[in-house]
Length: 193
Image 1 (cartoon, rainbow, N blue to C red):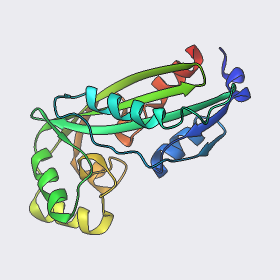
Image 2: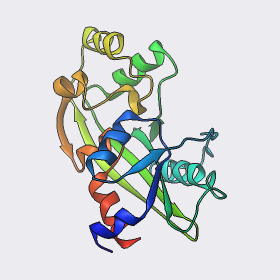
Image 3: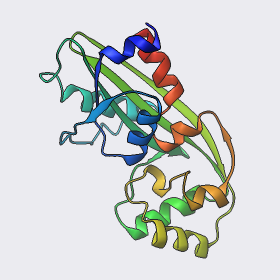
Image 4: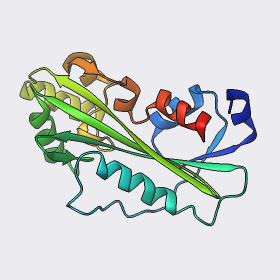
């Protein structure tokens, strides 16, 4: 498939994330945003990339009866993985503080699982990025949470925000994956779809 062939599909982005919407729009695809209420719990036995893969497939399965022959739904889920533990979205201020203290001065992995689902085909993949944080002071953590309210972000931070400017020392892999949508890998999978 070529890029121009993608124009005949109706894309559905099943995400409320403004970052994912921005990235998909800049990829040049026309899409509509449709979200469904999906329970985002997962088996505790899952590790690392298994978690976002499980969740993005679960989100895509909610569209089983909504797809016609030329529609493709795109779902995604992003987690932060550090010290063999997952950091999802923080529940409150104290949880966000705990997460950023955990990330401070260390390297963590960001995994995004993406699922592409059409009426008769489903493909899932994941991307991983290593992110190195400098040591954060308590004041920097408090300032960021109070001013940017990162409660909708895995690991309680957005790399495209103030914390990314001052804390990220090095990124190995896709920066856009850290934002929540690995657009290069998505594009490649769509061309093969």
